[in-house]
Image 1 (cartoon, rainbow, N blue to C red):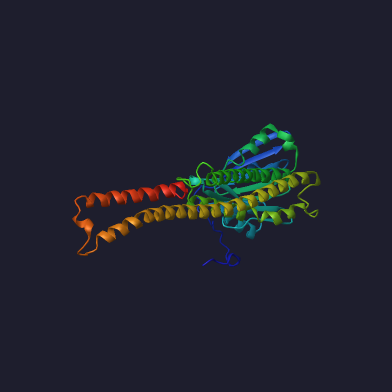
Image 2: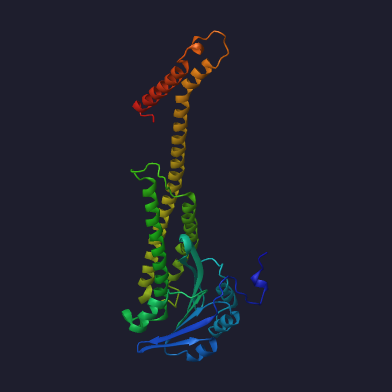
Length: 348
């Protein structure tokens, strides 16, 4: 039974990741960046008041560390609970001094299965906190951009960093959904291949089911953002500067592309299921046709065998010296004639 979190003062990590909790601090301004890695006691003293402080938290096992970090930035208890709940739905929340974005990051594991992990982003005036269940390479490109000051990223406010992180998440979804679309189109070509109307190595329903599960997982992860992302465009949101709003519009454009492509994948999946069932029916009809033809060939042979198998006293063929060979020859000739008749009619 799920417990009511409003009646509990204890923080618990709800998830399966066993990654130890560790922090990575990147403080930056126009002059440069300063990096620090370690535990909370090592990172907090390195925070700079004249910089944007980006703290990356990997691993949520140590709930006390998460609690102390959130308390340092005055993040409320309910938000901290949401951060530690890996099963939380995708959402965007506005608070007085910070914005919260909770979403899923998906990665491919064995047999094209997708594995989700929660990613939580908290953006304040001069800080950004990211909480990931496991190690992730999602931030590698952003760290490199900060070091090289790409697009003068170090000269911008914390909301720009939020938009960059969201864009990286959207890019990962775009990569996954584009690959899924290509794979589904390849499957469709296999089903519709003119060289093999009934392929001997036809993809099984299990393979289609993998893509259906992935589709549902992607939809569950990304679809709530369709409505939630509008919260970032309100003029009342003081943490998002007007100069950086076009970057969030770019995030929204990527989101709309993902949703449209996802809709196309749904149609492809429905078509693949129909094709699979139709090909199965066609294969079954072909098998039944072959069995019917074989049965039809043996019907006259069975008729002849039935006549000569009767126990009548006067049957001239029974006393004929060549009757046995005549019977075999007649049955072979009848079978061959029926076979070539079907061949001529292209029934076989």
